[in-house]
Every structure is written in C-alpha cells, then in structure tokens.
Image (tube, rainbow, N blue to C red; front, side):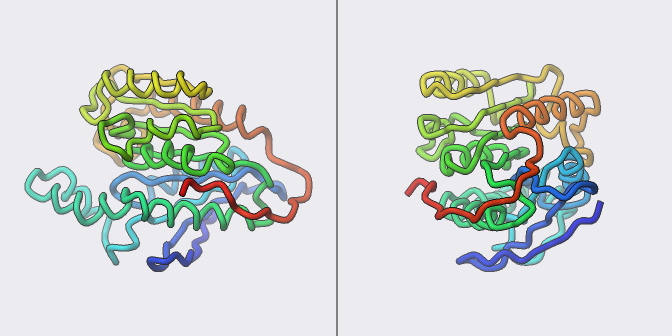
Length: 267
C-alpha cells in the first residue's frame, strides 16, 4: 500500500501528515484520525495505519511533533527510557503535542482536511491513539463530538487524573462510542483512574467499554516497542475493528455531499 504525505498548514506551521487509503474500491470510505505515540511517525506506526486502511478506511496520521523541528524517532526512544534525559523529552516533545491549544489546532486541521476529501465518507470519523495518542483520542471525542463517531485509547495515560484538562471531564460532551484498553502494568493508568473514568462515562451515558489487558505492559500494541506482545496486539486489532465497523458502518458507496460548516469544537 502506498503512503502519501501532505503538508497541512496550521497557525503554528506545517504539520506533515501521512495518508493511507484502501488498495481496492473507489470509496468514499470512513475516515480515521490516528494519534501517534510518544516516539513519532515511523515504520511501525505506518504498518498499523496501513492495516486500518486495508479494512476499508482512509487514515490520517499527523506528526504532532512538528513544532520542535527535525528529529529522529530512534533518538526519542533513548530520551524516553533514560531517566536522565526523559525530562528533556517531556518538556520539548510531549508537552508540545499535549498542550490543549496545540491539540485543538492540530486535530481541527486534520478533521477539516478529512471533511473536504472526496474519498472520505460524509459521516463522523473514527479516532484511535496509542500512549499519549490514546489520551488525545479521548480528548478528540469530547472536543469534537459532532465529528468523532468512535474513539479508542490503547495504553493511554492520565485519562482520569486530577488535572483540569483530563479527558474524563469531557465525558458529558462525548457522542462517540468509546473503547479504552489499559495495561495491567502501567503506572500512568492505575485502577483508581480506571474507576474514575468508568464513573464519568457511565454518568454521562456514553456508550463505552474499558478493559485491562492482563500481562500487558504500556506499549504492547506497537511492533517496535520493547513491550510488544503479538497475541495481545491481535486482541487489540479485533477490539478496534469491532468498534469502528460497528460505529462507523461499512464503507460508503454514495457520492459525498458538500462539507458543512464546522461548529463542533469546544471553545
């Protein structure tokens, strides 16, 4: 499958975004916004995006670290796992992507693009994210409720923290079907956070499922991650496709209508 790249203009610069389309058929297909992990777009994530596209979706994978300039994902591994340099990764890379204003700018740019693409179905899109991207996927569901029809978070952290920007506070705005999969061995999403998130989603009457994958560690879904677990990764694929296929429906075969004005973002 060919990967194409586009330069999305934002208020903060050019966000390079990788696009993946199904190999067969003429569409239009449902769109998917793929939120990267803390290492950035690379071959492992491209393979994952391709698998989603082969299922019958148009997948957009933006590089959310574009504000920091040129970088090498291989070096980010060392920054993340070295206690001495991890703070450098957090302040320079992680914070640049997770800042709420930055998130709004980036997510809206990708959603606007998908809305105007002729081969993307004229319906709500899916969102999936891994690690920090899992947090962003839930944030997207609450920030852009008229756009996001299904959102999945895999080993996302701080999903129901004491922070004012924690995604669980957005539960009353969510209209998407939500799936959250946490690792049993993950201090960024302990049992108390799972309970808090469950309570928030239930009280908001959000259609959701939260699961803890036994024996899993943070990163188990990503092929080049040290915690990768092939059988559990396949379980994640089954859950993700069940969510998307059920919430977004089969690929559309009708002609896409003209995009409507966007009035869905929380201000």
